[in-house]
Length: 60
Image 1 (cartoon, rainbow, N blue to C red):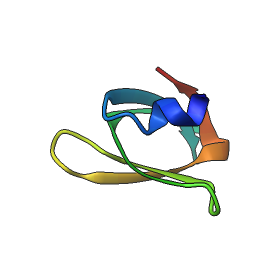
Image 2 (image 1 turned 60 degrees about the vertical axis):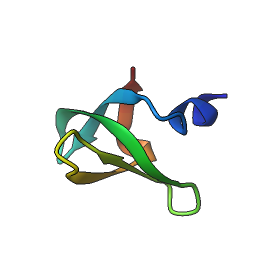
Image 3 (image 1 turned 90 degrees about the horizontal axis):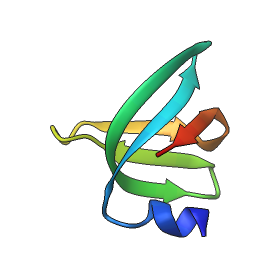
Image 4 (image 1 turned 30 degrees about the horizontal axis):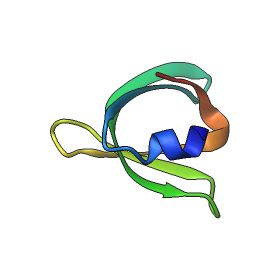
């Protein structure tokens, strides 16, 4: 159910750790790669961000 929610075409906010710091990004899910455990987001300016699933702290 959690992964199904990620594939909906709605904007989400992701809190994640990178280099020991907590970062926040807002965007829409562009790609979800379960084999490599990656989540790709695109923000409002169509800039792409890739986050490892293990680094995600919270999604809302």
